[in-house]
Structure formats: structure tokens, C-alpha cells
Amino acid sequence: MDVFSLSSRLILLALAVAAAPLAGHAHPKGLYDNQQQAEQRAKELGCTGAHQNSGKWMPCSDEATLHHHLRHHCIAMAFLPKPRWRQLHRWVVPIAAAPLLLTAATGSLYSLLLERGIDAFWLLKIHSGRFGPLNLQPYYSGLLGLFTLVVIGSGLALLLAGRRATA
Image 1 (cartoon, rainbow, N blue to C red):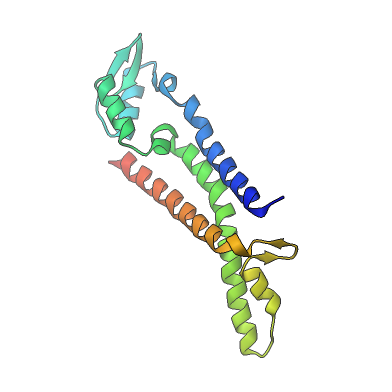
Image 2 (cartoon, one colour):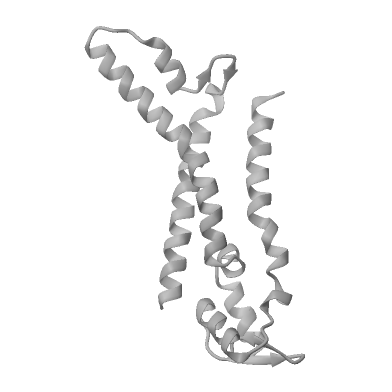
């Protein structure tokens, strides 16, 4: 199996897991039994009020305003409740951070051992993405960059969601 296709499949799997709840949290989930619940969701979206639709309550003063606020928010944050976003964050970040930590640890350890006259070249191989028979060296720096962006993006999304909820 080609290593690139494996990493592509893992990225697609992560995107599919992130997008899976979108269908379940779309318009039908935006209907509430009472006005108070709809107004609470309106605050989370950044609008005010609630309106009725087919005997149910929906966030924002009217449907056009609701759609405007949904379009102007990050899609994942608009449809994923904050606890679900936290769950996704807790699942994705350790997977993305593990190679970053491994690279930092092996590079630092190699430098320390080299100062003491110990040449542990095998640490450099791990540091650069060669894991025994699995050679990720051609893709490793790109994957590390992507994983760094995933960690930063996930953290920023949670930070912005927290600020939006308190506003």
C-alpha cells in the first residue's frame, strides 16, 4: 500500500467524522418546542429573538436572519454544539500532536546524546519520519505542517466558540 494513499485516507476519514454530524444537526434540529430554547440557540448564533415555523420555534427573528447568521459562522461551529466540538477536538488533537512531540523529543535527545559523544543516528531517522520499514520521509514535513495547522485550527475554533457563547 502506498504511504501517500494511506495518509490521504486518514485525512478523508477525519473529515468524514467531522462532517458526519452536520446532516443530523441541520434544519430539523433547529426546531424547538418552546420559545426559550430557540432564543438560547439564537444567542449562540449571534442573533436575537425567535420565530415560529409549522408550530415549532426557530432561532432568530425570522428565517432569513437565521440563514444569514448560519452562513456567516464557521459551518462546523454553527451546527456542532460546543460539547460535540470539544469531543472532536479531544479525539483529533492527540493524533495530530503525537508526531509533533515525537519529532521534538527525538531531535532534542539526539542533540543531547551527541554532546556527550554518543552518536544515536537511529534517532535522526525517527526524527525525519523513517519508522523502520515504514518510510514517511518524503511526506513527513508536509504531514507535520498539516498536523500543526489542525491543532491550531481546532484550538482557535474552540476559543472562538467560547467567546461567541459568552458574548
